[in-house]
Length: 233
Image 1 (spheres, one colour):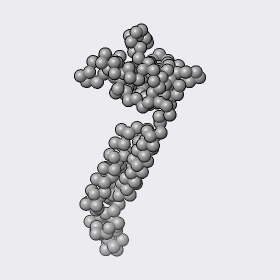
Image 2: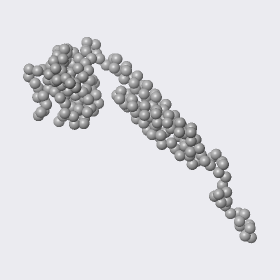
Image 3: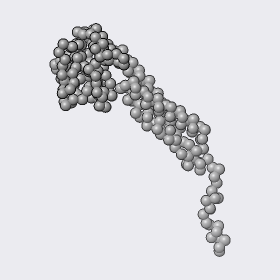
Image 4: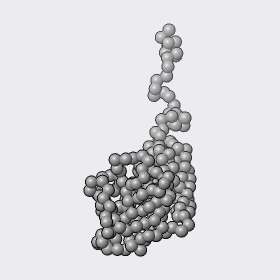
């Protein structure tokens, strides 16, 4: 009787065949690099908004390639090749599409009759005095220019007719202290208004260097550059 019971007992764990490929497959770990690659790929559409965001799909591609190499080397221990390939493919498409769109936008963003004016030509760079910078900016005085910059926060954030434009996010969004040559007082023509945004603004208008009567904006900000804008995006 005892022998009959033993014949019907479940086999011991040690008796389970471990040379079956399906047995190992269910215990393969999912590659962390592949997962992170896919996460970065989902953020890759941000590339359409700014050149610098291209680093996001680049990281995704690098992690995806790294994951595929590791999975191929340790195929009995790691899985996630499909996830890595999806991350790489999406990131390549977003990088090419985003930079392609930004290139097209750059070539077509300046309206006819306006001069593309980088902010660097108006502000004081290292080793260059502010008065020297203001003097050089006079070449644009009274001319129609196109310039890109960021909105400095103020008490009003919606339906603004006037705001101060600064050259970078560090100044506008992270408590920077802009120099006088870092600021442009933008006044919008009717019926234009604008809301505060952390994204870059594109402005067309007539530029003016006003050193005779400095404009005071707020309690402690003096501005020498002004822009009467007829178009903003």
